Amino acid sequence: MATGESTVTETATEVHGRHEAAVVEAPEAEYGVAITASGRRSAAKMYEPDAPSGPFSPKQLARLDEALTLASREAGLDFSIYLGALGEDSQAEAARLHASIGEAAAQAVLVAVSPGERRIEIVTGTYAAERLPDRGAKLAVASMVASFKEGDLIGGLVNSLRMLSDQAGPAPKA
Image (cartoon, rainbow, N blue to C red; front, side):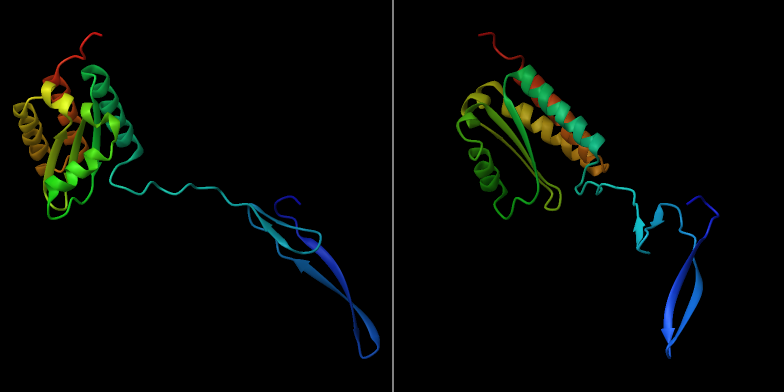
């Protein structure tokens, strides 16, 4: 059926023993809707995926992923970020999260940030601690605090990864 056309349907009814025929005009279907032969409406709808739920846009997540990959590759350490509540004992919770990494925890660096609690913890494994001085971690925390105060959560995380990677130095040659 083309736009602007209407469909005419004849229906027969029996009223008090008499047969009567009526002509009914079907309304014109709107765009994306078809009226089937049985009179049912069939509608096509555009698929719209759900918007990402979380603090970051897809572009910001890609930027963070790239920073994690580059920092890990350049320093030869496994960098991870945790963003969420750390609770009353933030240091113990960050250490528990770091330990949950498993066997790779020795060469891992966890940056745990709880914006709601205004807490930042950096936990290093035994091998990572040898390569990443406390002074470097403190500088990264100071940089994050400055960025977070300006409302730049993603920038603070990305810059801290760069700083931590630079402080650890290049991965040792095997």
